[in-house]
Image 1 (spheres, rainbow, N blue to C red):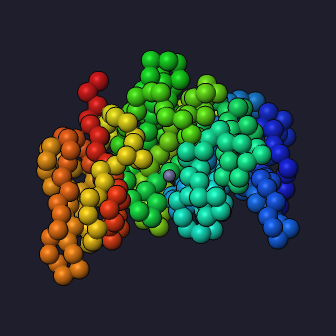
Image 2 (image 1 turned 30 degrees about the horizontal axis):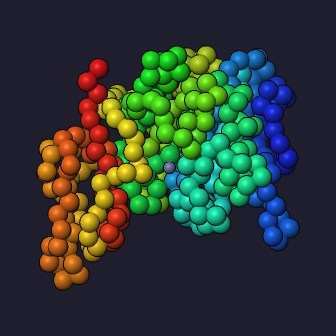
Length: 330
Ligand SMILES: [Zn+2]
């Protein structure tokens, strides 16, 4: 069926037994056209759980954008119980400009939830997802990656918490199956897709991957298989999840807002690789000037595991260099 255009959507009232793509209106543009979110959904003839999946919350993260149409292609109403609803690009303005945040209001959509239906474009996108998509979901997956600036280990993150949603978040992450499993202590700081989901009591997970303006086939395959695995775990599809082998189980805050920062400007060269174990004070990388003279060494503030690294060699004062977390000890 050709894409449809909708002013709003009610996931509880979608027609049963169909596959549908379409556009969801967000806000008018000055040229008379409309900012719209793309969506793809499949409803089984049989009722069942509702799984919501988003990608492109940051406009320069491509793996999830590629995985979502793959999942759509591999999902048929005849063999589905419940509803699969997916948005492959949430921050459409940032997708257009190949940026993490919106070029229009400068906001990071992943810090804007639950948004404002009468606010700026990013606030309206957050509001739409928080009010029309998340409330009906029984489980939620937000697909991220390192984007242009960062290189992140291919991972699935869950919320480690004693509450029921914590147990479901862990089980969903294990079913998704990525080489790295990363537990985060609750509560999740506000503004995120995941914090909005938690407020609505919707168990949730998120992913990371290499990014870099690319979508590596292995990461796209991991995300595609991961969403399908979660559908199997939820009983929406026949069969058992087939998660990849876990190489690392990590624990700590996913503090992408407070990575280790560069104290100098110049040309940066990392001295460690993703998932390296590092010791406190170990050199993570060096910054040299444009004549090759070393002007700074960036050192690890603690022992831990390198989970994200700066990808871009040009570095300014205050740019993020690395993110270090710990092994899970539980
Ligand atoms: Zn992201």
